[in-house]
Length: 87
Image (cartoon, rainbow, N blue to C red; front, top):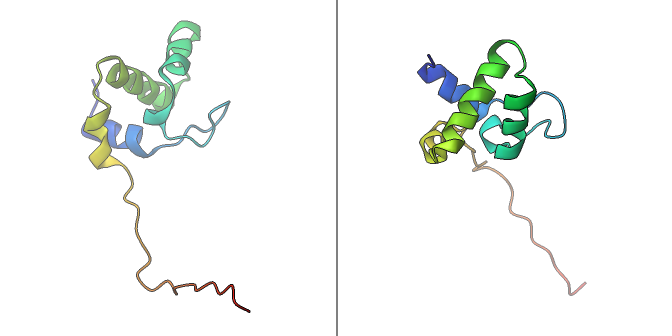
């Protein structure tokens, strides 16, 4: 059985290897996840999270993990850059 923390990991954890290295697990293509289901899941938590990502995608529930994604913070103190072309 999957926990709430597993959903958070699917929404935030990145793929550590392979063609889609660095991509968040829920953003992996369904075909890639199906390939794992036929060839064998990685061991440990990663395999469980990939299985959960596939189940979410198969059932069209990707939107349930959107609120769990890592929030993007804006830097309020970033200087504004002005580009001048008249020089």
